[in-house]
Image: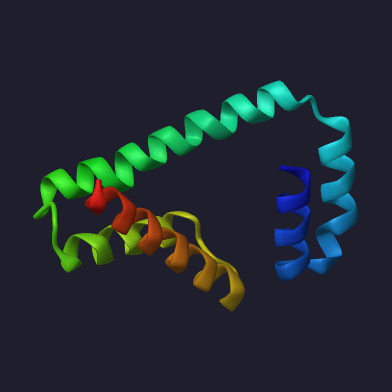
Length: 99
């Protein structure tokens, strides 16, 4: 988690790298892991399950609406974040539709 997080921050915000390293080395891993898992679960429930049950479950419109809500919810602040969240939203929508 530390390597992935610091590499993502290096790609998007180089001036936050020392703060990220300090946070990752001083914060207990259990509360962070629990909050990441619960947040991920609720995001998937909201952006995939509810949107897909509200719209047609296997359509491109569903994937686009789910992806749009996903990246708008995360409020990307630059172009790198925008592409990151659009890519993640599309990938997660396609995985949900394939299952």
